[in-house]
Amino acid sequence: GQWLGMLGGGQLGRMFCHAAQAMGYRVAVLDPATESPAGSVADLHIVADYDDRDALAELADLCAAVTTEFENVPAASLEFLAATRPVAPDAKAVGIAQDRMAEKAFISSQGVPVAPYAEIQTAADLDTASASLYPAILKSARLGYDGKGQARVKTADEAKAAFASFGNVPCVLEAMLALKYEISIVVARGFDGQSVSYPASENEHRDGILAVSTVPSPNVSPALVARATEAARTIAAGLDYHGVLCVEFFVLEGDRLVVNEMAPRPHNSGHFSIDACVASQFEQQVRAMAGLPLGSTDVLAPSVMLNVLGDVWFKGADEAAPDATADVATEPAWAKVLAVPTAKLHLYGKADARRARKMGHITCLGSSTDEAAAAAARVAGVLGIAFP
Ligand code: ATP
Ligand code: MG
Ligand code: MG
Image (cartoon, rainbow, N blue to C red):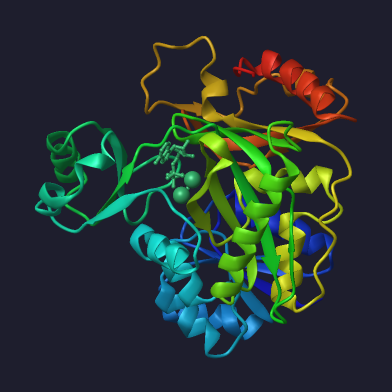
């Protein structure tokens, strides 16, 4: 079959490989780590840095199209590939999504609201930022994920200390909002401009990391889903986006909706689509980049997805250092998880477990959200994960 190219070796790349291979494609993964979740299941693993021109040329020569699984790939590498191959998403979209300032400015320009914020280029900008933003979160403009590169600050002095601790890199200072809850929408958009979207997932974060996604959530009204979907599609169309895009929203009092951020790739909150939908978000990524029509996003069953963090390996070992690693060979009780008949286990093949590290996820299905939640509660009990 044809080859598809993937920049990045993480779990999103791994699940992309699984989808692409099932559809008859071969996948070449370019990633600097000799061992990685995607590299170990790819048909070819090119071990190289993301800006290695020879490696990029090798990828382009081999592959019919190229995509990425993380937003921090150099935009210049995507541009280099795009000279000879379809690249989805393109450098412009990824460039916007990898910088919170550009991202917020772009989303606002599309008439979609974002959380109130100020751009912080230098410490002096913290003197002029509106006092109404506090209590606030200072977020580094680039390279943050899973709540890294963020500090909750109550005063300008605290914000200055946090800014210095980040190394004076450009940041946004964002008002801390009272969230009713959080949702996300995954959109897939083809080269022909056709797009499809998944239903809203309600997402619970713990310590800045996604913990639980529920689809459909009884909290989320159809009218709210419609507004969020419209906003996500507006953003995708405004970017002339090709591929899979996730838009994260905050839901405030009175069902007010603001965008938190976007991810130019399949998203953790869309993993339910693997087991609960006709076509998964990874299948859509394959379809979009290969120029195929997009698949159905119809939901076959309600689901509750639990993330499996490395913490599960440290159960009952609270004294372990926060940066300790555990050998994944000391397996958690997967057999007991699998004893729940609607629990679908996905492990990412990472070599060692660390606290707060995403090691896998489990999607629990049911004939109702309540039933899916009951299955999730059993699984959570086995693994020592808090639920609900
Ligand atoms: P991701 O792994 O999703 O990329 P990230 O590091 O980019 O995470 P954010 O999405 O900015 O982080 O924030 C993580 C979580 O922190 C949010 O999902 C939300 O729960 C909380 N949070 C972030 N910003 C705000 C805010 N302005 N007001 C209230 N809560 C917030
Ligand atoms: Mg983010
Ligand atoms: Mg986020």
